[in-house]
Image 1 (cartoon, rainbow over the protein chains, first blue to last red):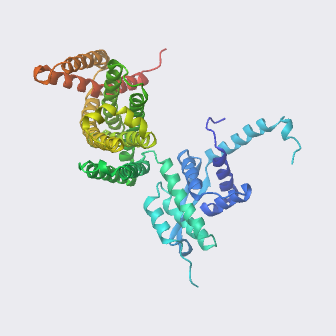
Image 2 (cartoon, rainbow over the protein chains, first blue to last red):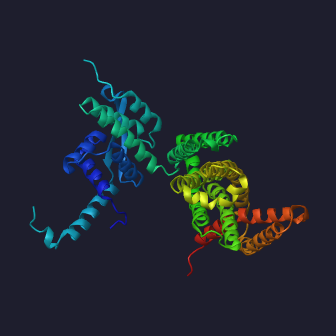
Length: 109
Length: 342
């Protein structure tokens, strides 16, 4: 298992990127997190997390075409790398292990 | 159909102050969401917090230093506003001008994107934070120590923090040279180290003065009586302005000289064989002690009675301080490069 540890928010961003597939850029990523947490998400925090993940080689990005509804600015599309996928799986395994056998979390709503 | 325009000032702010490689994408995302029905208040909140998040994650600390310069400037203006009679010596204008220069340097640093330059500036910022902590600790000891604490303690505190400061300014230049192999970038890093440390110290010291003015008046009682000023608060402010103008000038000069010396020293020592570097590691503390002892002795004499070897003492201590980081890094690098023992 990799020694890197994903933070809570970084994991959410990675999962949102995976869920969105080819259409993963800032707006749908932040919306996906907002819908799952029911809290407003700061675009600056989303990009700060994406920048960290990109530096660690867990996500990669490429620039799309500029569009008028974005004031002539291009979208930046993100996708998960193989290393990133491995990292998410490792984190999932670790969390499931920790999750199991805690009475307070069994069968609750 | 008319397209709604987001608040232009917020857009311009983010354009100017966004850091990192995704500044343009963030702005595009915010404009897109605004046009889909988000409010102007939401847009402003997102822009301001995106700028703050950008400032916090910036490792060269350019944005933090811009805020630091503004904070120090604001505190000086508030202090002078509370005690207008502290004005009149030209110190206020000197400090404002110097802080403007620090702010301009911070803006320049903030805007740099070159890899090598950012590596050098990161070395400067890291060393600058260390130096800032040392200077804060020294100031706090001086400020909170009981009045009349022994001269020896104050001497050790003053000399210790000054020597650490000189050593760290040299270390900034040496570390930057090691990352970039450029003397010019090493000097930029040294200056940045000094600027970061000075802004940290001034933010701390001026906050103390504003928050605990009565303590500051008691602390400066003797010089206040000697000055003949009738307003103790104004004397404290004038004293702060004087100290600020000194440190705002002296630290960059020291940084310039020491980072230059240390980067040259690192470039030279890197070529030495290991045995010579080990020998230097043993001899450098002796050179430093000899230099410091001659300065200590000179300090006990009247200026006119001081012998000419005092200058040699300054030179010896300076050479030792400039060599400390290069020798240490040269030895530690070679240790890492040694083949594993069989």
